Length: 184
Ligand code: FNR
Image (cartoon, rainbow, N blue to C red; front, side, top):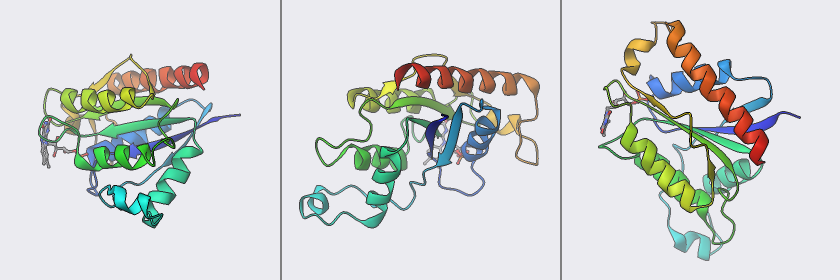
């Protein structure tokens, strides 16, 4: 049985480099993984009052139910101001509650960050790691994926334009397949 993987994309814009790279990672992955993108752009900012009152917004419930069913999560995200985008932090927060029902617990997780800049979202990558390790997520330690100079790695068709990047990302998703197999 293939392992089910939810893909979270940290950018909400339509021409997102990270979304394109996520699609490329899905295309490069082995058939032992089955992917579905879990959209996070419609998740209202986390407010515990809504959970306490038993009136969580429908997108929270949809997201929690979708994530509860998967074996692993692949997060592909830009860096905003040297940390993770608010969209990703909010998705982590929404998924972590109500108390005792966190969808992150025991989940196999891989984190890739991409930036047109040279540092490749290193800061965001480690912020995301920090939050998810605390939530008992089983975060793949290596290989790491800080994809710098990312705008130049994609052609006008939105596909990866060079063999080296294809090889690096194929290695990353294959390692994640092995990580998910071992940990779920
Ligand atoms: C950025 N960007 C950015 N890049 C980076 O490498 N480190 C950073 O700290 C930031 N900070 C930052 C803040 C905000 C609010 C924005 C909008 C952008 C640039 C960012 O990497 C670039 O816009 C990417 O193209 C965003 O990824 P997507 O949307 O193409 O996936």
